[in-house]
Image (tube, rainbow, N blue to C red; front, side):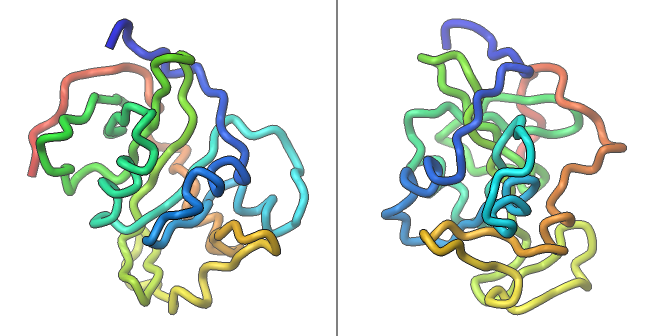
Length: 173
């Protein structure tokens, strides 16, 4: 990597562009956060600083490979660290940012869904569960998204640490 990525330099894809890039994906994924609400409203209600999408942990390497033009970084405890493609993903990390070195911007935020193929599970309280078919909806043009009010559950905890640096990877477990 030629230079350290600027953590503030986002130029997120629109949901349609993410969907096009993942159109041949054979695994489940869905848009979360602010874009999920806008997809539910069927209109953009505000400017978005990022785009977040979720997948099951076991599928994260698959989606990173689908978006192989990006370099993925783990986001944990207020820091980002570059991933080593030869090592398994840490079970402690639930968020990964996709960096485009050529364009010098972040495009996507990949978050881990702690559920199963059949069941959506709230990431902060595993007692809150729904059949996946009740939690995820699809726009008329085929973009999957987390339905409200569940979409509020995917929002980053604002009391948590802000990503403010690039660092070495934490211990892998």
